[in-house]
Length: 120
Picture (cartoon, helix red, strand yellow):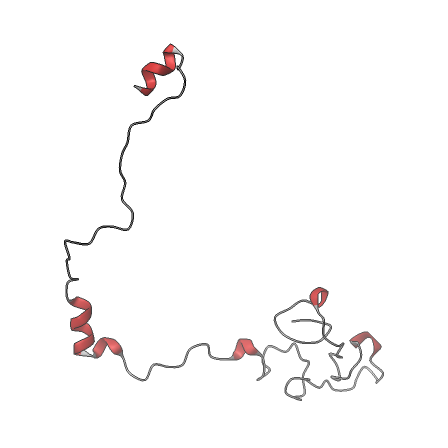
């Protein structure tokens, strides 16, 4: 969380947003908080009674569920299971996308006798 704009997923050193107070959600930096320090905090994301960096904030994107629950279990579907279990079609006309073809190496210069025996 950015401690300058109180926004998520960037650091204050890279922030281009306006300064927002962590304590009262005002348009000033937290160090310039004009009210007494015992004033209750106000979240600028949900206006709750906590600071914006509170992990339990309902607007915190890390608290969202990433994936929706599946409506059905696909593995209990007999048609889907049969399709997964069937063997893949073998087409003999298909060639692999890459094919290794060995070829002889031609040396451009005469190697010393001790290396010549090694490479031959």
